[in-house]
Image: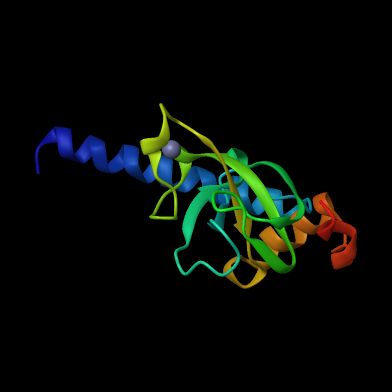
Length: 137
Ligand SMILES: [Zn+2]
């Protein structure tokens, strides 16, 4: 192993160690770390699941209409917006309809996400509203 690769190993270790400390501190204070992984789908029943960072997500709220195809869900789901180039993995989005990155609407499903992410999300969006509250839009 040359000096270069030894340094690289040290650098990787330092970068890797840092978020873990921040994440623990965030959990202890009842919030979550901005780099926390959030798993998203394009719509509630899509099989494809992508990953984004908590800090890349904006405007989370209960909604019944998905992005893209505008499909109506049978009940409200939490939706949020994210720039499409921040999504890791293949969700149902094509960049072909215009210059990117696009601000896309994604769906957050409880079973896809950690308890920490979900609990914190619920603090932001509040309790699930009744279906009739959203279906008229
Ligand atoms: Zn795109």
